[in-house]
Image (cartoon, rainbow, N blue to C red):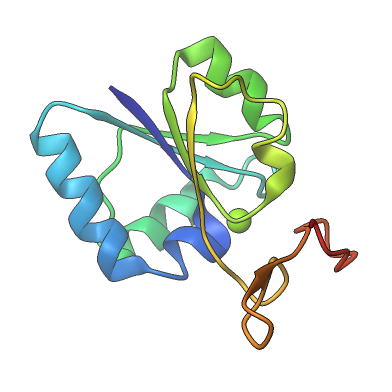
Length: 122
Ligand SMILES: [Mg+2]
């Protein structure tokens, strides 16, 4: 299985989990693709960050169009904090959304749209 994992507000939000998870999944023969919308050409900085967090990975890919990369690579799972990267993925791709203050109202215990317009989904 190929697994996509976002960096900012995903790995950086739960580094201990993603360190253990990526190591275990890689050891089980799965392929970890770190997919981020960071500035193109900053793979070395991303690699350094991943090393600091103890993340196991096979590929770092920087793109604004995560869905296109996921479909092209046959990735079957995405961990991310932003709805915009889930919206155009087919049902066959599992998505795991990380809660953050801009996509979840912890006081109201409700999901928000993560487009940062804070519009309620209901
Ligand atoms: Mg993110």
